[in-house]
Amino acid sequence: MLTVRRRTVVVNLVDGRTTMTGTRRLSWPWQVKLTGAEVHRPHSEPSPLDGTVLIPRHRIDWIQVVS
Figure 1 (tube, one colour):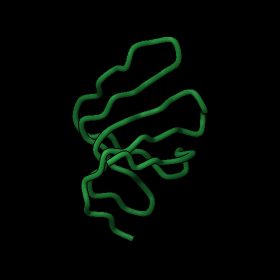
Figure 2: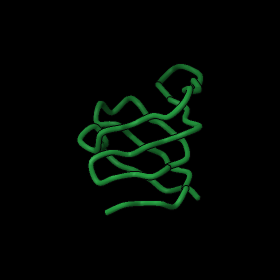
Figure 3: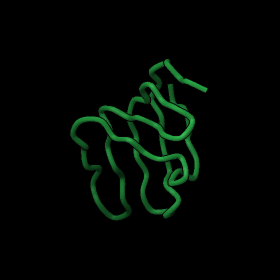
Figure 4: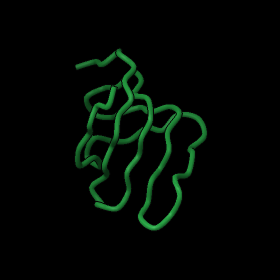
């Protein structure tokens, strides 16, 4: 399944502590590609990430589409 639409998403990783927000780009079934991403960790401010972030699906606990 190939996803083409650009949507703002919240991605929670399987470690249970790390959350990323960003715009989902062209994603394949085995990975999610985010641009304009920020990483949110407990007890710290959000940190912006440069460039494109590729997250393998096996590292993702859940994804929520915000808009």
